[in-house]
Every structure is written in C-alpha cells, then in structure tokens.
Length: 137
Image (cartoon, rainbow, N blue to C red; front, side):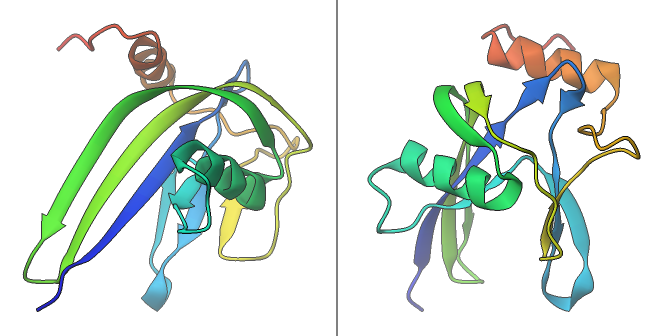
C-alpha cells in the first residue's frame, strides 16, 4: 500500500480575551476544537505561508509575524496508509476582523462576539510553551 504523506500547521493566536480556537466538523458529523490551521498545499511557498493562508481562510485574521515552531508532532499509521507531520507556531503580530462563517469551520466566540476564553491553566501552559519554558508536571 502506498503511503500518503502530508504536512499540517496550526497557529496559536492569543489575546487578552484568550486563545482562539476553531470548531471542526469532520466527515460523519463528529466535531472537535483546535487552533486554526490546516494542510499545507503544494502551491504554498513554505509552511508559514500555508499557515498564514489557512488562518486567514478560517478566521479572517491576517498574521504578519510568526514565532516557532512551538512544537512538532509526527504520526504514522501504516495500516491506514498515511504519515503526517504537524508544526504549531505562535502568532506574534496579526490584524483583521474575526469572522464566523456557516462552513465546517467556525471561530469560537462568546455571546459578546469576543474570542472564547479557555481555562487559565491551559492559557498559562500555552504561554510557557510559547516562551520556550518547559511545562512543569
């Protein structure tokens, strides 16, 4: 069986209101939440160009500067015929209007139209990772 390989990137976008997440509706209707991002296309100049494109498509925000990678994940599923590499980067500078669409991906916002907060301990862990500090156990 041929192995399909692809690269995926995610963007950590944090404001005083919290960390931005998107809702992903998968085939079959299951849902999960993640940082914005997606598959890097062959047409993308590089990984960060693809990540910038994906974040803008999903949220309306245009990232002008990234730092990282914060971490990388590699997964190999030979019985399913795929191999994937994912890098997560932190947005240092961004602008634009946060947009919510009726597609399969939505920016997570609260009732006031602000990015939804996640628990303080998760935000603190994300900040530590973004600043290069190892997470304590």
